[in-house]
Length: 150
Image (cartoon, rainbow, N blue to C red; front, side, top):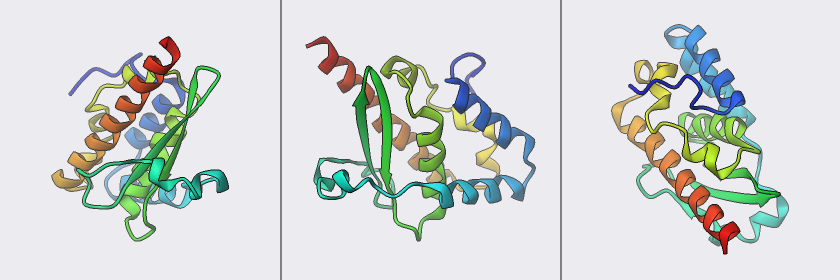
């Protein structure tokens, strides 16, 4: 596992700390609370869902969109309600990385969620999906940097 001290934006560090304090099943319950907090897509994006990035590595249909605002990124996810674990992860990623710079997103270690203890409550297959979501977010952050440089 990667040392994440200082590698995460402040809000994502707080979320990791929340999960570190939770024990056993409490981690899953916390993840489900995040699932309930995932915001609906904004109206302007509902009609442009085809412009969202699919995450085909996930068994669940997951779509992510990075909205660029003043050099920062706002994250929008579309994840079916019948997939609460994945919705929870998407919600905590959106909350933890909203208003982060592309560089901050790129600095997040690919395995940071191990520090949260999620491997204790979700399957290895789901962990692979979590890695894929972060990888797609990083790709969108790279595209944002390239667009800003152009």
